Image (cartoon, rainbow, N blue to C red):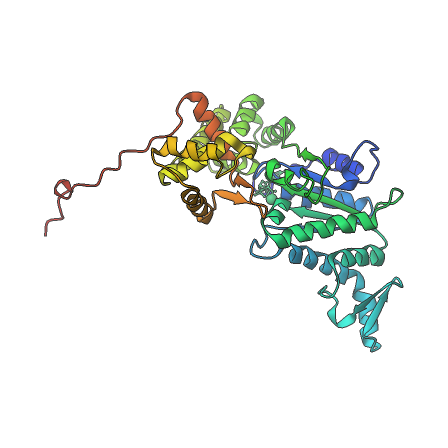
Length: 404
Ligand SMILES: Nc1ncnc2c1ncn2[C@@H]1O[C@H](COP(=O)(O)OP(=O)(O)OP(=O)(O)O)[C@@H](O)[C@H]1O
Ligand SMILES: [Mg+2]
């Protein structure tokens, strides 16, 4: 079931209507902020569905993934993508101009572009480049920024977001929207930081939860299976849906498990749905074990910091008096702000990093699944996890050395 893809045209149409102002009660023309957990199909949806839907609605679409190169300045990544699109639109005009020995192009009568530099946009601000793209294409530009929260981890990224906001404010008037912004990210709380404080670039916008693949996705898969293996009908959709929920609504692992049981080399057996559910449970247990071992190898103060983050979520302040008392309680040692700071630094230095920090100094867990893991264990009364007693191995009790 490798190339399987389930499309959601109604969702795409709905978002396009919101963005283009067809829905008078939507704030999306000021920016659409979409959040959904990791691996639930955000990027695929933006590229495979929202992009063509916006193009059909007459927009020029530019897609940028800020995680495509985390070491690069988000502003430069966005500028490159806009520049590449601009290049396409300028291509013909520019070639003619270059051929005629013209070194500067006058776009729509207001902006001069050095034809030698077309494709790069140095010398132009991001806002100018977007405006040039609007003018050259004579269309509305829709800029999609995937993993937009990443912009908040650096000052350069924040500057880029502020530039986008100012471009939006310059280009859009009540009667005409020329720049649409779609920002997505895997974590609502992190995305919120783009919109929820006075100083945030998109203050006042709301975050929409991007709907995850729902039961229809499972019904659709069940239909496909029934067609390929009529003897298996009717498929137990409830059980497959249970399995999908265990997998946190992530299509990829579900398809992989189905691929195992519906292997063309062995014909599937009745009740294969249960088998998928059992494997999904096992997979979830594996994921939880992985989190547990990641937690257990940490030093006590690092564990205490994470624990505090689990409890406090976005109210977490690493060095306030209450936090220091908490660390002391959990580690049995006096923890100074310096020690806590060192612990945070080492949690951030892990690969993958356990903690995320914004340029303004706010913290969050990188893998939000860990919050759920914590909540679950707490409800079950199995928090905190306890590791095996790692007593120093006693030399004398070592297993016998190999005999010559
Ligand atoms: N509608 C769909 N039908 C089938 N498979 C899908 C669908 N959407 C996504 N997938 C698969 O799910 C996996 C994750 O998709 P995608 O990368 O789009 O998710 P994401 O939410 O952007 O993930 P990340 O948090 O890593 O950025 C991919 O392997 C993709 O092929
Ligand atoms: Mg993605």
